[in-house]
Each structure stands twice: as C-alpha cells, then as structure tokens.
Amino acid sequence: MKKSIYSILKGTFLVSDDSFKNWRVIIFFSGLAIIMIASSHSADKKVYEIARLKNEVNEMRSKFIDGRSKLMRLKMESKVIEEMKEKGIVPSVIPPKKIKVKSQ
Image (cartoon, rainbow, N blue to C red; front, side, top):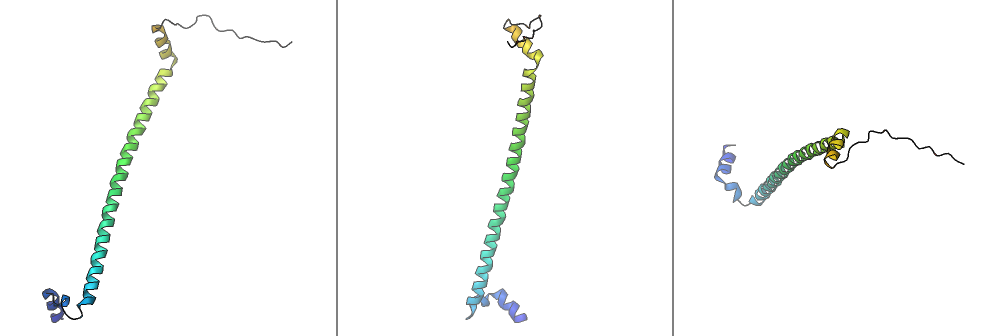
C-alpha cells in the first residue's frame, strides 16, 4: 500500500513499462472532464439566453398593454368629440331617423 502511494506521488506509474494502460485511462478521464466543462458552459449560456428572452418578452408585453390602453382612450366618444371640435366638426343635435323601405 505504501509503495503504490509512493509510486503515484513520484510519478513512476507514468513512465514504467506498462504505463500505456495508465495513459489511456488518464486521457479518457481528461476527455470526459473537458466534455463536462463544455456542457456546463453551454448550459450556462442557455440559462442566460432564457433570462434575456424573458426580460424582452416582459418588456414587449408592457409596451403592448400601454399601446392598447392608449388606443382605448383614443376611441372613447368624448376624446373623438374633443378632437373633432378642433377641426370644426361638432356632434349633431338632431337625433338620427330610421329610414324604412317598403317593398312594392
């Protein structure tokens, strides 16, 4: 047990005759570590992208609601009457009459 720990600390397991097996395992684990790190970075990028898109959606939703409320205010009868008075058009004081067509 003491010899194996000492050989690991010294690094003789990397240069011995059967070190090819050890190098394969080390390269395999290094490759797995690189893949894991790359996957983690990719996941982080996606999380940041999702957060950015959520903020953008919330901003667009608030702009939409603001525009819709402005439109509703512009469509109100009192606002239309006010705008038309500036142009010289006033609402009629005579109520409308219904026209009935009799078939012959």
